Structures are given as C-alpha cells and as structure tokens.
Length: 196
Image (cartoon, rainbow, N blue to C red; front, side, top):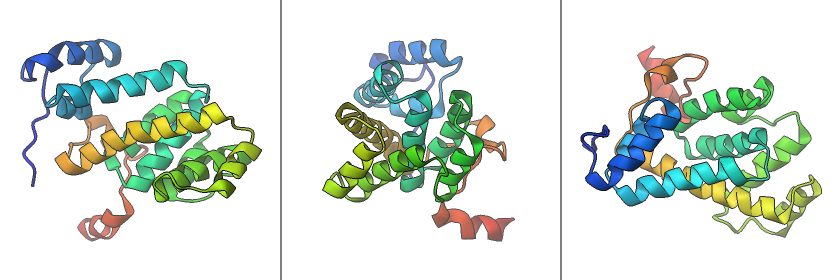
C-alpha cells in the first residue's frame, strides 16, 4: 500500500506550489490527481502542460478528444480518470450513448467516433505498433496525420495520470461518487458486487 500525500498548495514541495495555485485558479479547486502529482514538480508540470496543450491546440474536436481520453482511461482501468472524464465528456457534448458505450467496452454507433476510439485502443494495445491496417482505417474515417499524432499525445497524457492513480491509489473526488459518474474497473467488479 502506498502512502502518497494528496498535497495542498501549502503542503506541496516549493517548486509545485505556483503550478498548483494556477490549477486552483483554473479549476476552482486542486484535483486530487494534481495534488498527488505535486510530489514531483516535473510530473505535475508535464501532465498539466500536456493536458492544457491538447485542450488549446488539438485539431480533434472537444468531443473527439474526450472519446480518446475515455478509451485510454477505460483500457487502463482507471476509475478516477474514467469518472472525471465522464463529467468532462458531458460538458464537451459527447452523446450519452457514445459515452456509455466507451465506458462499457461496447461499439459506438457513430462510425467516425468508433474508428477514433478503436484506433486509440489499438495503439495502446500494441504499444504503438498498431500496424498499417489500423492507420488506414483511421485515415479512412477522415482523420489526418496530425490527428494521429494528437492521439499519441493524448495517450501519453493519460498514461501519466492513469499510471499515477494506479501506483499511488489517488482517492476519488467527492463528486465522482455520483452514480452517473462513478465507474468500476472490470477487474474490481466482482469485489464491488460482493460488497453491495
């Protein structure tokens, strides 16, 4: 069991404090993920910079960005990020059917979004070696070479957060306990049903 601290601005290492203050100003609070990442000023800045760059500069639409984020969260079984991105997905306008399909590992009815989701999963499954057929299917769905690289960037961003949450046992935010957001990873579902 890890004993990582979820830092506040006051408890964080000095080199993380300014960054956490900026996060609090943007989000209205310091998310527990960022509070945990603050243990390493480098990790905190790397994650936050990449996340913000995707939001500000990606040519993938906000809906498409969230489909990729959620595909990676679900693939990695990250309960914290899947709950958080369920909130962000709804805010971005992801159709509820598409959000639920990704959360439950089912095909998305929208062909373009399903192609995007599947490509992201294949890249992670194959550790980047998804192959020409996967790339062809991605381009055939109307995506560009730049967007292929954006998918890789989103994967890198979510790998930082998903792996951090697994290794440090980042606690859920209170709002993530809302049944509309809460998500239990398949590996924990038998335990959850026994506890209910």
